[in-house]
Image 1 (cartoon, rainbow, N blue to C red):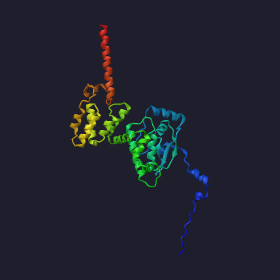
Image 2 (image 1 turned 90 degrees about the vertical axis):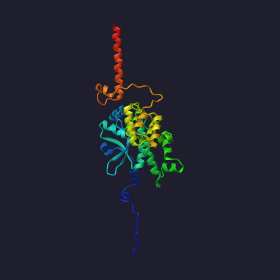
Image 3 (image 1 turned 180 degrees about the vertical axis):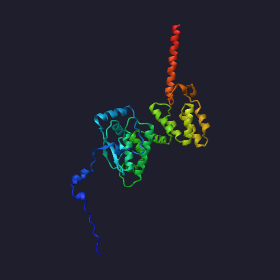
Image 4 (image 1 turned 45 degrees about the vertical axis):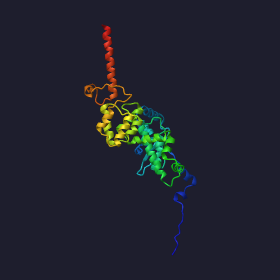
Length: 317
């Protein structure tokens, strides 16, 4: 019986190209890609806001183009997935440019997540909700990489010297290990409460500080929803002590609507006495959906104007 002969023959590309050409083909290039072929990163945790900075960026892109290329990876079904450059893509769309310069790189899901998070965490303004989901995504990706045996990247190296993924994330981003844990806890909040945590960073109302928000993240979603309704009806948010009390009652199986309301009605040590007006008495003076902050501001302005007119009448007598 003839013995099968296996020959390790070069491919046609190798036969008809030089080594220099083959090496050059592997190099990354900046390519202008149609915006229509670039989709957003799945579950992208960073919001692309239509704010003054975005308008300024769009003006710059319209005049000079995108100066720093985005990073994309090929999709299996065709097209590309944005890894870094979502704001530049939005600015390009606003500037009515049909294409955007991008670097195309083959990346695994976990590699793409880590690069996406790291590139966005360098921004100056990051909301707590953005950092919370970004940290969670990166930690999960790093842990999956650490379980593999075919990688020689940083996660395995750190694992060998006894460092945990959370320690690495904390060190790379200037937060303590405990602060990283707190941020990730925020991902357990319902959207309405998480928005109030973002409000604290933006200076908007109503707002919940970080420490009470972490305590509230341990409540089941149904109890968080009940709390949100109590916040709206009582027009106040829980302090850290009140949040700790709710968590304790919840863990003991004793937290219900009445208990939540009772805790919310407790007077805080630094609470300033408030004067409340029934909504039905003032609704007719404001358009539906007017924010409470604007209603309060307009009422104060109206009272100041009334006082000024009273003084003018007294001076005329």
